[in-house]
Image (tube, rainbow, N blue to C red):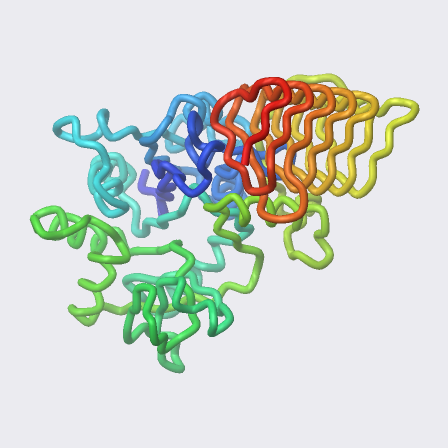
Amino acid sequence: MAKEMVAMILAGGRGSRLYALTQQTAKPAVSFGGKYSIVDFPLSNCVNSNIDTVGIATQYQPQKLNEYIGNGQPWDLDRLYGGVHTLPPYEQAKGTDWYKGTANAVYQNINFIDQYDPQYVIILSGDQVCKQDYADFLRFHKEKGAEFTVAVMEVPWEEAPRFGLMVADEEDRITEFQEKPKNPKSNLASMGIYIFNWDILKKYLEADEADPKSSNDFGNNVIPALLRDGRKMYAYHFSGYWRDVGTIDSLWAANMEVLDPEHSGIDIFDERWKIFSRNPVMPCQKIGPRAVVQDSLITEGCKIYGRVIHSVLSAGVYVEEGATVEDSVIMEGTVIKAGAVVRRAILADHCTIGAGAKIGGEGPIAHTASGLTIGAGAEIKPGAKVYDSVKEGEEVC
């Protein structure tokens, strides 16, 4: 049975701008919003949009992501025909090449896509937080008779040079593509989310792979080739919530936006468009008798005896009496001991913050790698990137 549309999630990026957070974890597997991972958002969008066949191209540090995806049951993607499949390059390539670029990641999985004989393929990013109805996107693509459609958002003109930009006419047909231009002709930023007719995409992937000069990238190679050939290319205007969380500051800011759904536009409590995830089996949260918790998300298994203000805590976090967490993101299983103060920071999973330690403060966001011990009385300055455990009383800038 043919599938109308197959989704391909590109989840192999290293996430180098997340520094210590991705030292041992692929960016799509990084925690977000207390009980989610970043990859939950494209997966949930697929399920909510009635897409039941999803390939996830993995590469960098795939173990945690592969274990998290499992058989796809939390997203209702444990299907006999279709479902979710993790696609590492060494299983799909003829040789042992790693994915060389975004286009090559799809090219290496042509056989996977072909077995479902789809009319359309949607290309998604595994490192964005976005709530989007792909069914509406596909309707637009069909109505326009398009061969390629890209989701775009209007951005402030002063920010436009940071993005790949689509120049479109009054019918939304794309006439030009600019990759991070100094002098932008448009403020329609590409979201890196594409729908292709599969026969067209397959043809261009094969031609791109045959070009020894190509970097095998959608933005640098495939999309310009479509433009040169005068293909039917359209821009789909998206007005919902979308954030690229590829930097420490953007990841922290997006987590803070989860705390303010009325103004930020991201509502994880929306029953009409649920975000599904794989969650640990843990007991209820425990709020101690002298604890102070204000404007925060506290996930299951947390034990709070200190102060937690305007923060996001993942499962199993323990905040001892006398400790303070403010404007911070604390990932699974981290322990913050008595007298420690954490402000404007992201702490990765299973860290231990010693008594009286100070992390972060006014200024750039400080963050740690997974599993570290920050010694008692240590001080981690704002903006510090902590890759290794810190000794008692040590200062890290």
